Image (cartoon, rainbow, N blue to C red; front, side, top):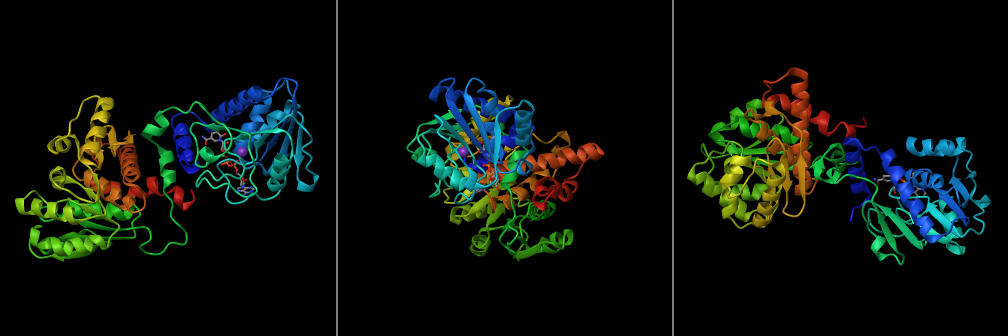
Length: 480
Ligand SMILES: NC(=O)C1=CN([C@@H]2O[C@H](COP(=O)(O)OP(=O)(O)OC[C@H]3O[C@@H](n4cnc5c(N)ncnc54)[C@H](O)[C@@H]3O)[C@@H](O)[C@H]2O)[C@H](O)CC1
Ligand SMILES: [K+]
């Protein structure tokens, strides 16, 4: 089952893989024509009612496969108002080939006639709310008439995000939906055919730029709405927590606090005035600090635990205690990873090991990425947490769903890139599922590394990545 917006992700990923939407539209239109042939006979009267979006575009393709039917094609609205290029191209093709097209600009003038079959291609996954005019009148005419109603993708009026069927929606007799079923379709009193439109499985497996469309930033949001991240790190090292925290800010979090030993707080603050420091006594994390840190963590949307903590026994005891008490979302990196298999926790963890650390946790790896994928998936299921296993192919799995990020390059084997990844994952985990957060972060940080290396060559350092993160992650959100 895919919602309309998840379908949008898959669709854009397919495009990134070289299968553009216009090709998918051709497959969709053809699939609808095949359904028409099952429900009606050559020579029968068929009326296509097309909306101005891509749902309508699908049915404009269908027309070209129905030359042996008695065909009418109605466009609801003026051709100039068709919303997408690919739909307009299909409309123009019907004009040049002199298909019997009509435009309906006034719903009062709509005359559906008495065809054997009506193709409802008014609205698909782009709808919001009850049907407006002229779609509402057209739906009422379809519902009142005797014609068999074949809906394209969803009955017009079904919200493919929520599954809600509008009061004035089309009552479909049959539905041809694309690639996968959609919310609400199983509740309809009509048979639903799922048509394969040639989207490769890779569009759902590989993380591609379509996944970035999962990100949005509410224009009405206030400080804090986009996430508050607590980084617990530092002690033996100071650069790692500073990198994670700065990366969390670049990843879109509103507020990032760093809890670290007082002995290194000034040093960490010195790296960036954007960070808020929450020092605790001493020079490394120890069990005595956990009470305070657990309270602090509970008031954040995500915790990043591990960067620069070191592996002193007392520190790892504190990490274990901290994770056992925590019930929010935590990104666990570096030395803290070794503790995860030993603890019980209600928290949702995103563990970010490289392959060596994975083995240290008790997982297995393999040279072949497909084998590795299977191993990571089963280990994630075993520990009941999300894993992001770093490598030339980043494997992300929550034990049920698995994604693969293919961005990144050998320049990124340098120290500190993992801290950046943990920080971005923490920021995204405030507003996304753990799996999506990890997948998008892996893809984005790898892409950032690719941009830097393309620009300047190898020899990148982790701080090079920070400034470039927004360009990959957030450009679209800023309207570009
Ligand atoms: N892989 C895919 O997902 C593919 C999907 N295809 C088809 O494309 C549609 C979705 O197309 P889209 O252009 O995004 O949206 P719609 O055609 O559904 O509608 C947009 C159109 O509707 C107007 N609108 C919104 N709400 C209402 C309302 N309540 N009343 C009236 N009008 C409304 C809005 O303003 C827009 O103008 C998908 O369903 C598939 O059929 C591709 O063809 C192939 C790949
Ligand atoms: K429809």
